[in-house]
Length: 309
Image (cartoon, rainbow, N blue to C red; front, side, top):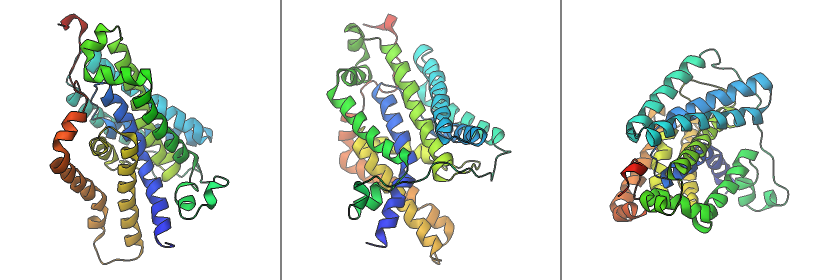
């Protein structure tokens, strides 16, 4: 356990940016909006969070700015997909290309610059618990916030009226509109908030996890988050499990590299992504029908009131 516990603790830290992005995507998809631009949004969040933290010395301001910038990108995505009825897949891919290019261009002068960022601290009482204390309760504030966010989002989606309204506009927007729900306005709201959470995951990468900026530092985690939504079946708790599974494999391969294993580094670096693909294949074979049943019925389908039957 002395060897395993540090790896598990590192898995939680490594999986946290994916968890934020996955929770944000769950919110958007539950409202009926597909956003494949997570990679670009995370990169923009990582750059903006880093630059603001570097300029102000406050990591919290950096993370807040990352969330706000992500919300602005979500507003743009909502305008294209909700108001204009554009193809959501194409808009998401365009967002990824925009975020990747813009972050590389605007961040070229900050490569290799380090910041202090946020640091870990133990939670009194809980940190003394055997194994669990060192794994879950000796982390940074953003990890603790992600724990709370998972619980709050699960309760919100399943046990509150606004959460039921959210599921309604994602499953049957025509019926929701007939009930008097402002479908377009709600889709705008959840797209903005969800994209903000995605960018917060990127901000975590630069402000807390790495504490520096590097071009392309998200390294495919946005795409992993899209896959994790399917793995989680749109359930926040299963999203946390998937994120920490990816983080655990990543932490394990880093330990292998540090230990001087003869396995080539590129092969080790592909392990987390290969594991994600393998898990998705297993789920597709075993729960293919369940995935279709749990997916929001109107996911990716534009809704216009004037076209309502």
